[in-house]
Length: 326
Length: 307
Image 1 (cartoon, each protein chain N blue to C red):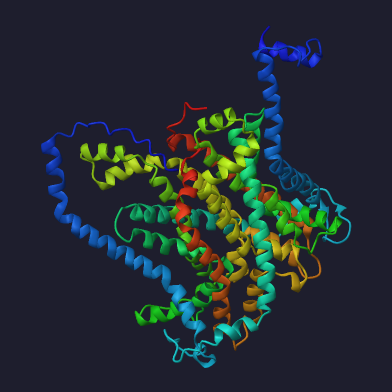
Image 2: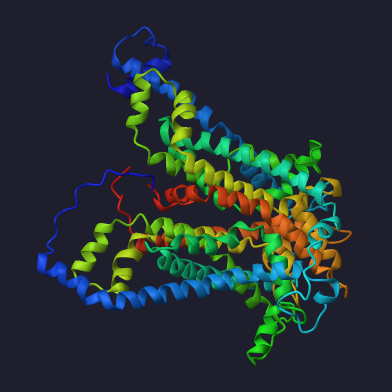
C-alpha cells in the first residue's frame, strides 16, 4: 500500500491508525504531532494575519464604497469615491505624481549611496568600526527628533544651510519654503539616513567568499572590474531585498512630510500617504474615512504593481547560488 | 552569517611563487596613498554626518537672544546648560517619557517573543503547509500599514479599545512580519544536527526553542529588540491615529506638538526644543551602543538572501 493510500484508509477509518505498528505509522504520528506543534509556534502570526491583514483588507474594500466620517454609520455609495478620486479631486494626481517622483529619485540615490558607503567601509583597516558607527548613527535616532532638527537647519532665515552657502558666496535657497526646492530638500534630508541601507549591504559584502576576490586578483582584475564582476553579482539578492523594501518605504513616506512640509508649499510635497492621512483623519469637521480608504486601495495596487514588476524582472539580474536547493 | 568557522583548507591556486611576490611589490607604494585617501574621505563624510547633531547641541546651549541672532552663530556666546532642565519643563516630559517607555518595552518584548516563536516554527518544525504560511507572512510585509488603520479604527472603537495603548501594543505580540522573516532566515542557517542530537536526548521542540535556540541566536534577538525598541520609540503615525487624549501621548507626539505649537510664531524657543530633543534621542542611542556588536551578525541573515 502506498503511503498516500494508507493515509486515506486511515482517514476513512478502515485501517486503525494507532494499532498498526511499524515505521509508517510512527512516521505518521510524528507528522501529526509536528503539525500541531508547528501551528502552535506560528499561531501568533496566523492570528495577526487574520486581524491585521485579512480583516482590514476585506473591510476596507467595503469602506471604500461608502461615505463615512468615522463616527456615524458608513453609507453605501458604490464607486463614487473612486470616480471622484480619479476624475475630480484636484490634488489626487498631484499627490500620485509627487509620490512617483519621490520614489524614483530617493530609492536609487539611497541604494547607490548606501552601497558606495558599504564598499568604502568593507575594509579591515584601523578605525573602520568607528566610521561604521558614525554613518549608522542617524538611523538610530528617532525620526521626529531628527526631522525637526533638519527643518531648523534648512530654515531660510535662521538656518545654518543658508549661512554656509553665504560664507561660500553661493546663492542661498528657500529650501522647504518654496515649491521649486521643497521636494529636492525633502529627498536630500532622507539621504542622511543612508546608514540603514549601508549596514545591510555591509552584512552582504562580508558574506562574499574571499576566494572569489583572490581569484579575481590572480586573473589580474582591477578594483573596478572586481566590483562589477564579483561584488555586485554576489550581492544582487540583497540588492533585490533592499530595492523592494525601499520602494515600499518610499510609497509610504509619512513622517518626513508631516514634520518637514505638511505637503506644502502649493502641494509640491504632498505624497499619497500624507494625503490619505489628511483626508481620512484631519479634514477639520468632516473626516472622509471612506474616501481615504479608496485612496488607500489605489496606493496598495500601485505598490503591488511596482513590487511585482521588480520581482518579475529580478530573475534577469539576481544571482542565486542556491537555485537548486529546496 | 553566524560564525561558520568550517573553513576548508584554501585550495592551492595557480598563483606561482614569483607571481605572488611580484603582485604586492607593484602596489605597495600607492597602497599608502590610497589608505591616506581612504581615511581622508571617511573623515570628511563622518564630519558631514555628525555636523547636524553638533549644531543641534549648539542650539540647545544657546540663550534666548542668541537663537534669534541674524546671521546665526556657529557656537553659543555663552553656554546655557540649564536649557537641558528648563526645556523638558515646556512639555510634560516625564509623563510623556513614562508613556513611551511603557509602550516601547511592551512592544519590544512582544515583537521579539512572537517573532522568535513564528520564525522557529517556520524554519525548524516540519509541518504541512509551512511554506505556504511563510509566503503568506512574507507577503504581508508589503501591505501598506495604512490599509489596516482605517478598518481597525472602527474595530477598536467597537470593542472600546480606541484611545488606549492596545492598538499600539497588541500587533507586536502577534508576529511582526519583517522580524518573522529575519528570524526564519537566521534559524535556517543553524545546522539541523543540533535539533537531532537534542531530540535523541529527549528534548521536545519547546525545550529546544527555549534552551538551545535562545542562547544560540543572541545576535538575532538583540538585533530585533533594538530595532523594535527604535520602531516603537519613533512611532508617530499610529499614536497620532489611535490616541486622542493628551495624557496618553508618547514622546513622539509630544515632541511634534512642541515644535508645532511654536512654528510660525516669531519667538521660537528652539534652544529649549533642541535640549529636549537631546533627551528624547538619548535612550535609543545608548541602547544602540550597548547592543552594537551584535548588530552586524543579526542583520547578516538578511544578507543570506532567500535560502
